[in-house]
Length: 292
Image (cartoon, rainbow, N blue to C red; front, side, top):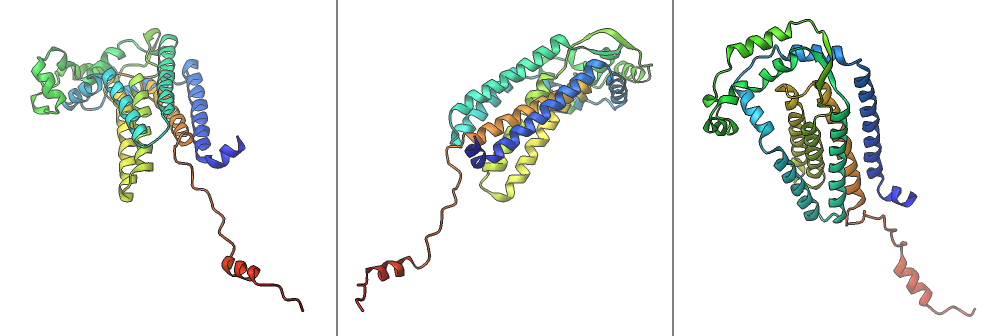
């Protein structure tokens, strides 16, 4: 183990970071269960309900919902092909699959056992953030929405705007018997997991130096947008999104550490330079010894 540490110290730095994130997730979950985050969560959601509602919300909703399972499967195969192309050992595919299962297990166990308390009517008001007018739109409009053709999206109904505004000013009386089980958000978890791994791959393997940092930052931005989009359009509470980001980032750090331990190319070893004047020493040793 000491030899492996000397050869791959960066891997254990990533594992240590993953452990730190796991401890943060546990501490955050304890605070969530204790109810100490309820007041701040409701205040943030009420502030969110004050944001302008626009037709762009419809596009964000469709991008969030369309083919989520297929998208995760596509990202899995994309990462797998990247690992093979970059000459990592094939067993990293098994590690990727196992970490994905760990993420699913944390998501399912959390959603079945933990519930968010919130004021009566807030869940309905939050649904107005995700383009309710699209529910009754024809398929052609949905296709145009997915393509970002915002001018073909129906206007936001005034009653939806009024309901969101009214809920933002209601007194935050919690419904302790609420059944909102979304802790943590699965989509936000997987967004952080896949895109942060891609960010590290771009940073480590992009051959053009001046593109390394921009591409890595772009992947991080996509991860953040994909995660907090669930909160922005009212699908998940902020607590469910933050917890998912912690878990997804933790699993991504684990995967990066495993990738560093499974590179096919061994790290460059420091070869000892040949002693100086080797040829002169060899010629001198070949001369006959004087018999004086």
